[in-house]
Image (cartoon, rainbow, N blue to C red):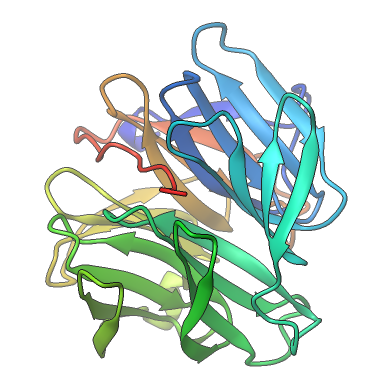
Length: 291
């Protein structure tokens, strides 16, 4: 297979196949890659030193997990909203619900910008309403709704200089770009990349050290690398149809880990696996939440 693809977690392993794997994030202080299975719901991890994987059940859908700078706990995105999470104590403490007027929504996919703010999308749990938004969680644990009317809000990532945020509406097959000011305000929303029908739908994203975006294709059996102008540079085929997100990890940030979903692909043996790829480029250091 292309790019030296290795299957890290699959059917028959301790973790098995994720129903909806998402949100991979490298936490160098722990030497651990975390990712979630939104619909299990569960938190998964891979310890790089031992090679061991683990899985912990959650009481409600879990969209993402992000470490806090200088602390041992995390911020998590749940169906009920933002919360802190202590892994060692397995304790969740709610922060607040950014969408009390949309009880059928859940948080879905998030990233941290250069100022330590979390940008998190939301979506209708059943995917039958256009009720998703893009929210900003600040280090003081207050939040604001920054954009809206998404079918499936997905995949935040940033330009190398931090002045552009890329965010998708998967349902619209479109990756948008916004200008991001130092104070966290957005302007200049514009289409960055529209997926043709045979590409599937844009899902999670990450940025490499050359400023190019790696985008997961739900329904497209691949990830793609595009340059800052949105031009396709490379496509890497994967043995599962629903590819959901990706993140660089490891001491050299030279290993690209890709999540997938078994939902809608029950007859495909590798659907829902975690894949490890050697793509010949390195990623950017992961950021922790500043609060």
